[in-house]
Amino acid sequence: MVKSTTQQRLRITFAKGEEIKYISHLDLMRLWERALRRARVPLAYSHGFNPRPQMAVAAPLPVGFTSRGEVMDVVLERRFSPYNAVSTSEFARCLTPHLPPGLALLSVEEVHSKLPSLQSQVCAAEYRVTVSWVGSEEEMEGKLLAEQVRQLLSAGQLPRQRRDKDYDLRPLIEDLWVEGKEADGWVLGMRLRAGSQGTGRPDEVLDALGLAEKPHVVRRERLLVLPQSPSL
Image 1 (cartoon, rainbow, N blue to C red):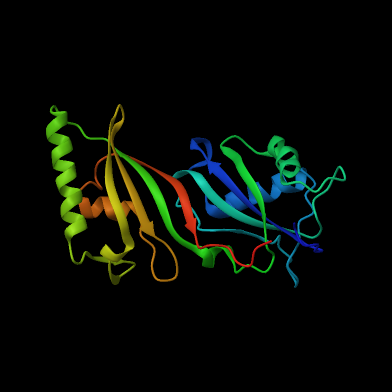
Image 2: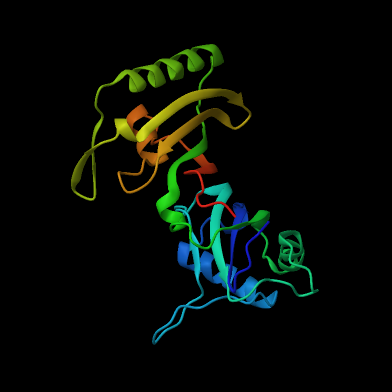
């Protein structure tokens, strides 16, 4: 049973599609704020000179990426019950008609208001990367790609540089695999670390594989968060 509380914290999982993959993180948050307002969701606001809605995404998605596993926490000033029914399904039903093309609501759940910030709970992210590969021998391409992945995973270090700072990419790669060949190219799966200890990026993994110059499409499949505590 959910404990009675004045405010309500909801965790939204959503998809970001092709239609809006080139908008910035700031513009994405504006889209969400506009949709929530139109749905008459009682958003809680911060205090101070410039109050802002209490909304936070788990990890901003780079421009140009799509996703079907983005996560956002929204705090309501009171429990959402427009029809005298406290229900996350009712929340989803009211909000969905106000979402723009390219933004899809996948699930809504209530989480404990005392949980740490959503950003601090993220520990990894999984990606699906399709790389266009122009070649005449599919079997040879697959063997070459598998060998490149094997060599990268067996490397003790992968020295890289980001914003003029040196770092090691290898600890940020938790797993990397070849899913197979599709009409658009070869598909790679990646599970990369995310958080305060460092965040792996798919484009840097592609660069380490020698594939950065090939046309590619990146989709974030899901974000992994630490177990929730306390429970509702």
